[in-house]
Image (cartoon, rainbow, N blue to C red; front, side):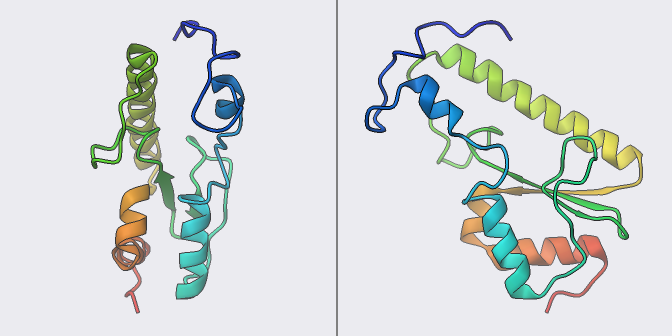
Length: 150
């Protein structure tokens, strides 16, 4: 992917006085409140144990149960191209954003295939589904772990 068109360091946003560049620098790849941290709270509340975070595996899964070889990724709807209705189409540089998100989706598929080829069970959780039906997400993870959800 080449250089982004426009002047991101000067382009205004609807987030106060932040430029587009400053805003994007604040987007975190880990510790995101609506994805990772929401699942941390849910796992702790449910009492599901045995997980670790950010183990050195391909794709850097958000949660890993090493003994059971289960890797869980919590994907943000915008960044990973989920077609859930929340995924807004950017008005500025839409072609570049489409290319970026398509690249993320390709990488996600590649990483999932690689982990599965190494004997891992891969669970991908969408941000919107985590918010709307957390019990269902817990059941999916419990099933992957071979445990009965409580």
